Image 1 (cartoon, one colour):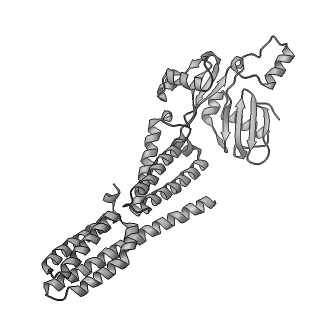
Image 2 (tube, rainbow over the protein chains, first blue to last red):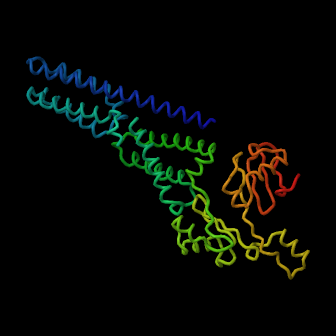
Image 3 (tube, rainbow over the protein chains, first blue to last red):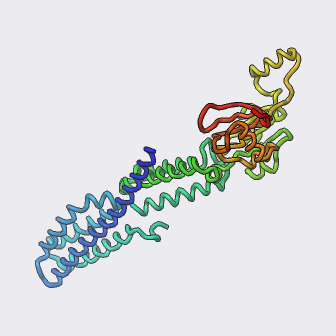
Length: 124
Length: 242
C-alpha cells in the first residue's frame, strides 16, 4: 500500500512537473522572443540598443539556470553564444549585425519551444 | 518531461512485448517483465551519467516512470491470473514418463541439445532417470526424477526397511497438479489430472470449503494439499469424504 501511494505521488509529481515545464518553457522562450523583437524594433527605429540588450541579459540570467535543468544543454549553449554575439555587436555599435543575430536567435527560441512541446510527433 | 514519461512507457511496453515474443529461452531467472525493466533501467541510468549535456531529469523521469509501471503491472498480475499468465506465460512439460515431448519443444523453440544441456545443468545426465521435466516461466528447467534416480528420502528408507533392504519402491514419480489457485479453478490442470471441476468442488464442499476459500489446492495422485485463505494448511485424500 505504501509503495502504491509512493508511486501515485511520484506519478502526480511527474505529470504536474511536466505541465509546469511546458508552461515555463513557453513563457521563458516567449518572453525572450518578445525582448529580442523589442531590440530589433529599437535598431530599426535607430533608438538606443544598450537598454533593451541589458534587459535581455538580466532576464536570461534569471532564467537560464532553470532552463538548464529542463532543456538539453546544447540548446542553452547556443542561446548563450548568440546573446554574447549580440552583446558584442551592441558594444561595438554594429546595429545591422546585432539585428541579424537577434533574428537568428528569435528563430532558435521558436524552434526550441517547438521541440519541447508535448506533441505526438515528438514521442515517435 | 511528459514526452520522456510517455516514451519510457512506450519503450517499456514494446520491449516487454518483444521479450514475450522471443520466448522463455532468452531469459535468465527473471520473469519477462522484470528482465525488460532491468535492461531499460540500466541503460537509462547510464545516459545522463555519461552525457552531461542531458539534464539529469531525462534519466530520472523514465526510471521513475518504469517504477510506476512495474508496480502497476505487478499489482495487476497479483490480482488477475489471466493477466499473470499473459505476462509470464505458463510452465510447460517438455518431458514426461512417455519421453520427450517433441511438439512442445518445438513450440518453445528448444532443441534436444538445449534440453540435454538443461538436464545436465540440473544434475540429470541420464534421460531414463527423468520422469518429468518442466520448463518454468523464468526459463529454468525443473526436474522430477523417476523413483530409482531420486535422492533417498526418509520415507523411501522407511518403506525399504519395511519391505526388506533388497526391495526398492516402485516407480511412483507423480507430477502434482495445481487445481485451485487464489480461489480460481484451474480447468486445464483438472482435465490433465483426469478429474472434473465438479469433483473438485464436491471435494472442497466435503471439507466445508468453496473454491473461493482456497489459496492453493494441489493434487499428487490422490493426495491433496490445501492451503485455505484463512487457517492452516491441510492434507487429505481426493475423493475421500472427510
